[in-house]
Length: 338
Ligand code: UD1
Image (cartoon, rainbow, N blue to C red; front, side, top):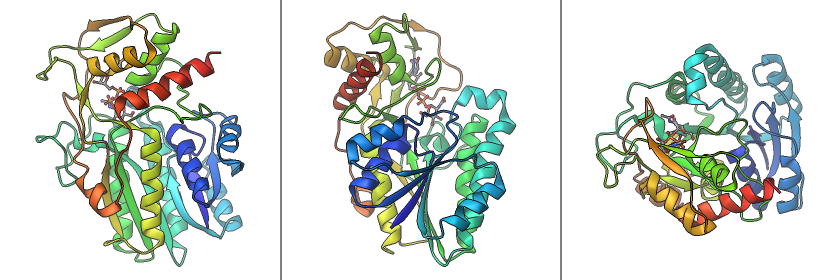
């Protein structure tokens, strides 16, 4: 069975390609390499023994998307990762984000609507909940006004898919709302490759640990949390990748209860920034150089998932702890700086 993975050379995409190939799916990747590297294909091959099909293609070029689906009529499922994801950049360049994240989604959905049957998995984010009123966060918590154009593209993306599914019974879709993905493959062959200065906590920690950055800034220790730093739900990227495969199989096997469904993908455990630092210090045996600075504008105090729906309905559960995931992130950081 052939599955298209857009953004399949990226961090979460590449780990998902590995899990798909391990389960016997034929994968074709589309990636424009704007935030990824073709060498990732070698890593995927080293782990799975198979190089996936790959086309360098910019999904903003509508005729190229049409042409791709003409040439690959046997694609039965699509996992759509390709998107821009830097919150700060999205505030500076909103139209870039709407074009990259919304325009391309529409082009792909149009192609899928032409098929007799199609399955679609969308990368959404816990960012749609904003600062939720209750912890842990369930899927029926209200979607809050987006803090950034990036967050808005995730909310709008979900609405576009939901609206399309309502009038297209042949289209089945699942949106996965990720909490905070982290870590790297246990093989050390693939992992996170942030371009420039990392915006996310874990790559900033490992880059500081290895000496590439001088110091980690901890954004605020005066939040109403036990140690004063923000709380997040850090989900190991291999666990997250497996959730995509399970979700896709649900659609392909016709097990879904509605033709559009939403699931949280997290561990259900909240960890503070200081706890993340402690887990790095434990797995690396190094002291991390960090200082407390002002809060980062737009950060929420706390977000962690209620994973009951994914556990019960998808039969999926995160297996790795923050410390295990941090260990793999650290092994990866050391390997790429060798
Ligand atoms: C951010 C985005 C979210 C997006 C996700 C993608 C915001 C408000 N949210 O989530 O929409 O889906 O990335 O991965 O930008 N921290 C530090 N120092 C650092 C970096 C981070 O203290 O140098 C803290 C942050 O304040 C936060 C935690 O670490 O409390 C996690 O930050 P980050 O990895 O950037 O993720 P989010 O902000 O949760």
